[in-house]
Image (cartoon, rainbow, N blue to C red; front, top):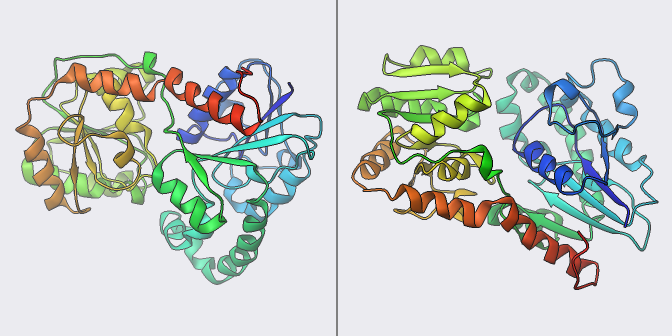
Length: 366
């Protein structure tokens, strides 16, 4: 069987890219396709060839990849994948548009519907400079929404990372989706049942991560908070923080691993479509204090692996932190929950069965 792996663009290393990296490792003989590729800034695919589109030849495209949004659909449509029996796309936007031959199968791991088209107001808020061009952008996006709906019909099967994303796929694209919670490499995290006197937030410093809520809550509580990550909001957030809050910036994988294992709790204030950070925290034996909406509803057990707060306000987070401080956590149980449900083994066991059924076979093809 000839397999093609397709991702929107490999110009960064976020949660979607980490999942695609797992797919690349799982299918070592598959060919890799993407619109743009920047080896220095994205996942490690070893010495494998990464096939790109005509966008790769545009000067500065990898750096300013958001500015060429209207070109992605024609770029993916131009890819020749007629020789492949199985196409596995990993997409939040464009890769689902690839063509296949009639008797081939296309399975799309959909991390979200095309967010900047269907939640434009949030998108413009996160990338403030774009708001000055809002009328023009809205006109272009309206045209692109029609194209997105058309090409969203291409995959034979959608796999969603969470229940909330599955509902969006159904509501916007009119396509059913099977929910398979995405995995982490549990070997990358170390267990510790000895916790230090600090809490941890690990996130890119952009508006929807709501680090401002976390900072305000810890300003009031006076507890020690460490924040790892960087981004355009960094200076503004630093200006709001008191001395009990420390900004670590970007940290190495080894440092991050240690931070996760020793934290009293990891704090997540964003509404995440899925969210790998809570699962990574649990894999370290660390409970999560999270805004109780979105993907965490699929991954967390209240009172066992974490605590939810109901509103994205400092006061609601404070109440959850105080509640979490009263719980005698079973750190080993937290770790076991993550390993059992969100390991690569558990993930691919489900995926193999789903894709096998989609192909009309019952035996494993991996």
